[in-house]
Length: 218
Length: 111
Image 1 (cartoon, one colour):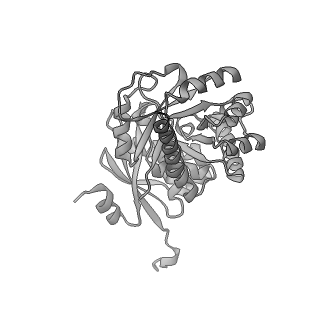
Image 2 (tube, chains in turn red, brown):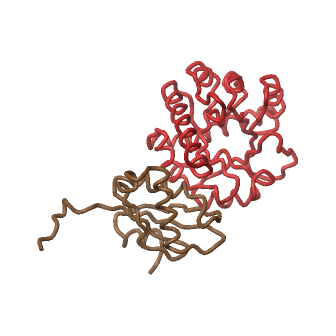
């Protein structure tokens, strides 16, 4: 049986539920583990829990992004970058300390180029595909985002960039079961096996390598 | 009247689901939400191909019927529902089966 991991779940104060409640709901839905991710302005280091924590860096300039990556690399297990801006997307793909590029579709251009995808593959930066757009957006906005996500998934598939599926949940009502996430990923062009890897093998390998690094650094 | 040949009959799959919502959900409200979500996601033609319909719902757990080739789409429709009657809700799928009896025994545990 696959060990599914939801790598992008936002807990209180960003979301409406505590990390422990989200973890319990995830276990009930069939997940093996979750990574509680906070956007960088909401990051709090005084967390006393056995859960895995990550950060999603929001930055306006490349210089600020590098600074924040240096700061968070030692503190959080998973370091993601909230993309969108073309320069931020590229800087995130260039940096091997970054684990995930999330929301690259939220910017004006919104599509990863082949150059960015090749950089991401070289530096083992995974593409985080947030499926919450399916239930958080509607009509034209949803069509726009799904088009961009489909293009990004296609580029990453072609160039061998690891893909990670996440729910980007802000409350327990935003969480979906692994089979539902895989069904949504199917709409974006991932087949059953690829969706399985994106929901289990890829997040687990990122978590394992980063935990190993942390242990080695101590 | 001559009975329809087995090869011409429609084949369905039954998707078991469970609802989490702060309020009690009525079956007709759920049916409306599911049809609306399916239409928003796949359009009118997609809804007709999905043939999605609730066959059983007790307020918490239920069974959804869909075309046997469109199980993934039916699961995606359930996942895309975020609100029922303007309240937060989650429709989580439990599993899929070929008959109502098997789905009920496996996933709904109703004697």
